[in-house]
Structure formats: structure tokens, C-alpha cells
Image (cartoon, rainbow, N blue to C red; front, side, top):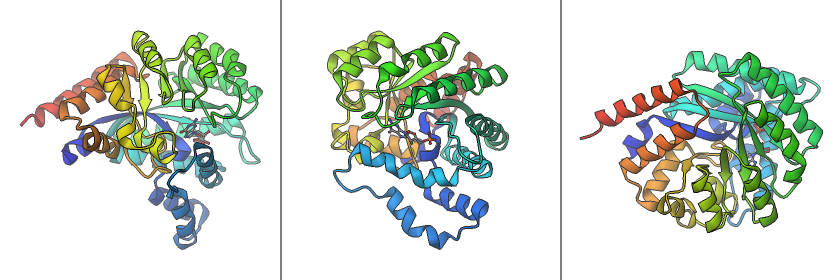
Length: 338
Ligand code: 5GP
């Protein structure tokens, strides 16, 4: 089963770029771009992937600063993007949607940031057997003007690279910022054809959850605190919930893997996809998440194939790309029928 899941051609729909670098890749980036010796990094790396039991979601957001420093130059960002894509490809991910928050600093504007990521995705796709899309992220703890700039840049980049820039992610610390303030920017993106992946019900905030469901989205990140009627809403509107088992448990929003809502979603046949969220920070891979689901909930091979099929359906890929993925999945499963 483990071999089957590791080699299964997989689809990753919820991956934050700066959270997706595994420790070895962080070391490689630090050494090759900044000339930092691996030893200097050992203690920092340990802290990066260590979570105290009972960790709080709020604390997790502090972890990213460590990688953000390494991706604060064009060269660092380019190298990091290529490494992240390489790591997913190594895990037999055939299709990846990466999200990242454009940042401006003395080295780069937000435009430079996004252009660098797009170019690096193109380079990486020439090297590895993987298709990669980009969802620029709106960080809800930043001002609305930044979100407006991100949407404007995304629409512009989408004109040049419609095969790469396909949507907008709404993320950041859910206890900061008001969703309703960002609705006009998100609406503009949607009106111009960008899909919306919204972190929704990550914490228990019934007013905001109601606002988000009413506003609508193409996919829902986490959905941890949705009620049964919220799940029913997702089913009725065919909105998949992006489930990130290890992330939710390590960041303390779900108590144990066996208590994860994936079980209820499976039983109620609500659309769902299995994702990593931040495979670097949470020290996991998409294969590990499938293995965990198999070990915890007894997911069979055919259920894992079914989940991958759902991920293909709910991806922001073109119809041709979806067909190609289905054929790849089909030919893999045919080979492993016995
Ligand atoms: P980046 O956007 O810098 O490439 O990836 C890291 C950022 O993604 C974090 O600073 C945070 O804004 C967002 N992020 C990563 N993981 C999570 C998560 O589990 N929940 C939410 N709401 N945001 C996240």
C-alpha cells in the first residue's frame, strides 16, 4: 500500500510556496544562494519543524519568517520555487497548484515577486514531469490596498500566462483582518475569470463563515469549523474542502488525526481533496498524507484513487490537462490492478 501511494500520480491543490520547502531544500537554498553553512542552520531547522503539543494556530504564522528571509531576493525566490516544484515532482505529484503572497522589499516589488515565481515555475516545468499553476495569495492581515494590488497584478499576469496564473488564494492569520473588507477585491478577480480558493472556517467564527458561504468560492481551505449544514452547503454547491491532516493536527485546530473531519466528509460524500498545506513546516509529503489517511481511516486503494480523481475534477486545470491526468491515473491503476 505504501509503495502504491508513493508512486501514485497525485494532485496537490493546497500548497503555500514558502511553507513547502523541506528542510533539506532549505539547507540547499541557504548554502547555494547565500553561502550559509548547513551547520549554522541545524538548530533553526529543528525549531522550524518542531511543534509543541497543544500548539496554537497563531504561533504557526511566526514560523514562516525563517523561510521568508531566504526568499527575499530574486535569486533566493527563484531557487526556492524551483526546489519546491522539484520536491513535489519527486513525490510523484503530476499536477500542483502553488500559492504565494507577493511581498515587496528593498530587493523586489510585488510585481517582481510574482514575475519571478512565474518564470521559475516555467523553468521548473521544463525540468520535471509536472504541471504547475499559480494562485497569488491575499494575506488577510495586510491592508486591503495590498490585496487590490495583488488582484490587479494577477489579472495582468493572467493575460500573459493564462496557463499558469489561474486563481487567487485568500489566506493569512484567520484571527486578523475582516473578510468583508476584502470582498470587493475578490469579486473583481472572480469577475475577470480568476478562481477563488478561500481559507474558510479555519477557526470558529460563525459570522465570517456565513459571509464566506454567501459570497461563494471555488474551493474551501480547511473548513474545519463548518457545521453539518455547512458541509451540506458545500455538497449542494459542489465546493470541495481542502483537507490537510498533519497541518490541522500540528497547528492545533484538530485534536487528533482520527478526529479530523475528513471522516465525516467521506461518509456524507461531501467533495473533498487531500492536500499538504505547508509540507516543509509540517514535515510531510502528499504521499505521507495519503498513508496517514489509509492508516487512520482505512482508506482503500480505490478510495485513494477516487480522492485523486476528485482533485483532478476540482483543479483549475484546463479540460485537456484534466483529461491527460485522468489518463495517467488510469494507466497507473491498470498496471497495479493485481
Ligand atoms: P507564502 O505565501 O509566503 O508563500 O506562504 C506562507 C504564507 O501562507 C503564510 O505567511 C500565511 O500567510 C499563509 N499560510 C500558510 N499556511 C497557512 C494556513 O494553514 N492557514 C492560513 N490561513 N494561511 C496560511
